[in-house]
Image (cartoon, rainbow, N blue to C red; front, side, top):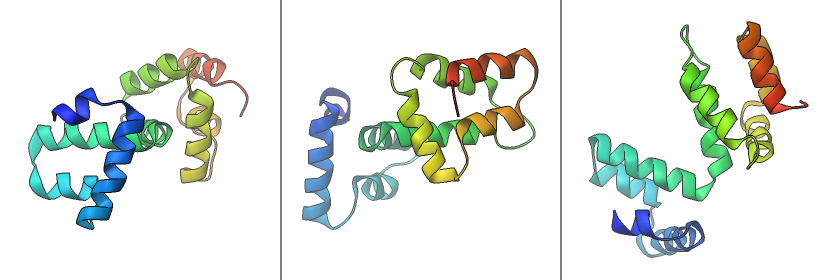
Length: 125
């Protein structure tokens, strides 16, 4: 846990690659088999985010828009907090994974002023 929370992302990636080389399994696979509950979830979140932060956020956005009840807090938090940092990278990962733009997903799944605000932050499709 100390390693995951104190090392820079670049160093974590090197460690994960070396761990795979030495053990034959990914860090995610090891965490899945060795831990459970909230600790496992927290560690997996750190690992996924370190490996590919944009992919992590793209997956969280899609998950927040699934089902009958959206997780509006997650959608707002990610889009607002990442819009001036790496939202373009997240949009690219979203397109690569889901074969549709984040803009299109927001436009077709959300309505009203909420949609207008989110689309303004996302920018062009």
